[in-house]
Length: 91
Image (cartoon, rainbow, N blue to C red; front, side):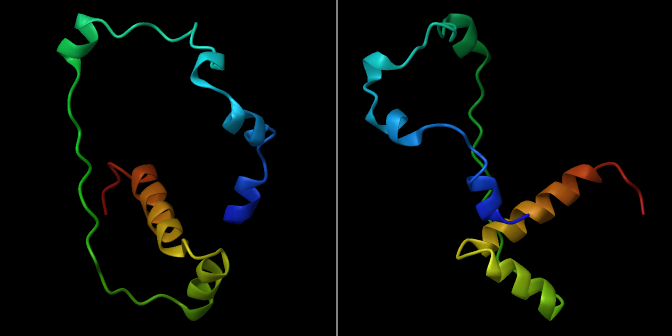
């Protein structure tokens, strides 16, 4: 599966969404943000990325690059998914 496969799976009419005004957006199912929400809210600033140098198999790199110009983000997402799936594993 490629990044393009993910992009093409949506049945949303994005052109219609882009044309909608703020008044046309249905927000009836969104609860109001009250004092309790803000009292419990926490500011979360994501950590920056760390540049690294890593050696990978040529065919692996070719595959990621073939997915498009955002291939580095795709590699990061794959590594994050793997790391999250293996949290708590001991080696």
